[in-house]
Image 1 (cartoon, rainbow, N blue to C red):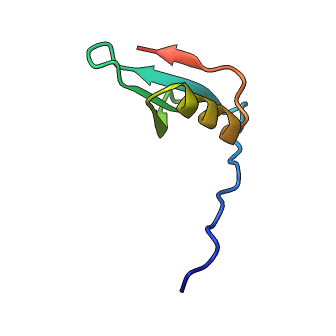
Image 2: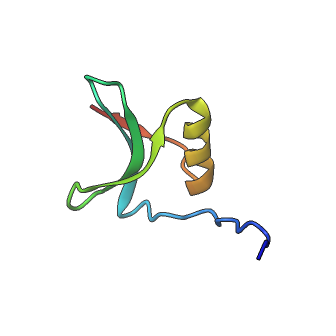
Length: 71
């Protein structure tokens, strides 16, 4: 009944097809991290960014070095 907590392995993305983006709202200041397809421009939400720790977690989990911001 009580078992070990499952760990989620770090996800990988293909930089040839996707790029890391933080989408920011001008009105509310909400920030969402995700990946944008290079070919179609479609944005895939991954997680809400509330503070610097969330951003560091996203970078570490997906192995991202640089992220662009879009408003």
